[in-house]
Amino acid sequence: MIESLLVANRGEIARRVIRTAKRLGIRAIAVYSEADADLPFVTEADEAVLIGPPNPAQSYRNVEAILAAAKSTGAQAIHPGYGFLSENAEFARTVEASGLIWVGPGADAISAMGDKINARNLMAAAGVPVAPGTTDPAADLDAAVTAAAEIGYPVMVKAAAGGGGMGMGVAVDEAALRTEYDKVRAFAERMFGDGSVLIERYFPRVRHVEVQILGLADGRVVALGERECSVQRRNQKLVEESPSPAVSPELRARLLAAAVRAGEAVGYRNAGTVECLLDPSTNEFFFLEMNTRLQVEHPVTEYVYGIDLVEEQLRVASGLAPTFDPDALAPSGHAIEMRINAEDPKRFLPGPGVIRTWVEPTGEGVRVDSGYTGGNTVTPFYDSLLAKLIVTGTTRDEVLERARDAVAAFQIEGPKNNVPFFAELLGNEEFRSGAYDTGIVSRMR
Image 1 (spheres, helix red, strand yellow):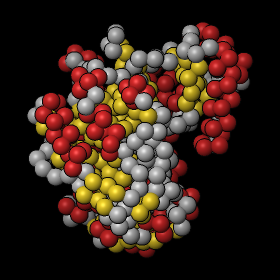
Image 2 (cartoon, rainbow, N blue to C red):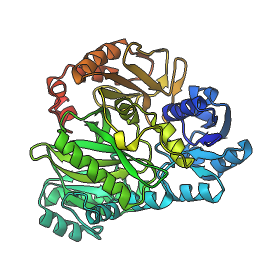
Image 3 (cartoon, rainbow, N blue to C red):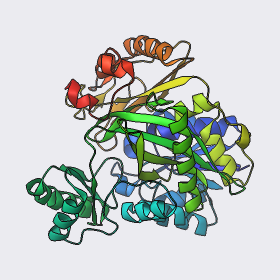
């Protein structure tokens, strides 16, 4: 097993990885920016290294600073968490070229799945269903108009190099397409350094369902069930649950088999997620993208399958067998995760500030993975995620009732936060029925 681990991230996920590392007797090393010096993950690590000012480009995305910290502390491996450099193939290659162990999929798999058009084509070749769309980037606006006419409106205009719900727009007709194409292309060039755009069918009433995969050290790829991720604002997730209330045993078997084929197609190792769109009217699903990293919502899978995914990541990176029997995977129970963000609960606009009060809920079936505590300052430099409230139980109904109590008990004063939104959601009949889709938040607003 790896003996020392540098976590190249911050906040909640850094704290989460550090917790498992220390449980396994691995020396945990944190890196932090000047803005994060007082956060819990810094003090909970065995060692912490200041790597730069608040600007992520000068700290958490500063490859030279991270590698220098690894060298000065004698780190044996690097875990990238999610966001920042986690899906940067060149960073993964640089880590390994430096003689360090990369706790994640190989750089080739990251690269192959990082471009949405290339990923779509690879998946189609592997027999994974893909939505109707372009097989090459739309070279210009005229090409986009031609493609959309062939696919049929409405269409989704997407940045080929995008991710995390960014760089996307919906066009219901040619006039809208002309606007969205220019907007998405400019955004993609600015944010990703790649203005390539793809056009694909847009499904107005659709569910977002994903499958957790794990590429084992012996070369096998296994699927650890599905997660429902349809509660979203601006194409970004707010709530995830497992198992999905929309997925039957027959559909689950097809989803998981397709996800395994997706992983095998790129020789996948370590943890990853195959994201799909599900048409609830036909039970057809289509490949959306593969996230070549640990997901924010991994705790719901951990509960349903009774494993620690970070531990499994470390075991794969160490060349060790998993803690579970790959041939006897069976889900049990239900879990829901709510992303507690520093944003107002109506328009979901960021609201940084000093945390005056922080009281986490407790009780049976309640877990909180937090990046902050009372007295900390939520700055505008990073993602607005404060904590993840995970509620578990035997049935979905039991989890919903526990979740209502847990949300009511979560006290945060200081920065704006979306806890009141979850109280509203948990009382919403559409959500409680399980028959919701990605439009639920807009219908609530």
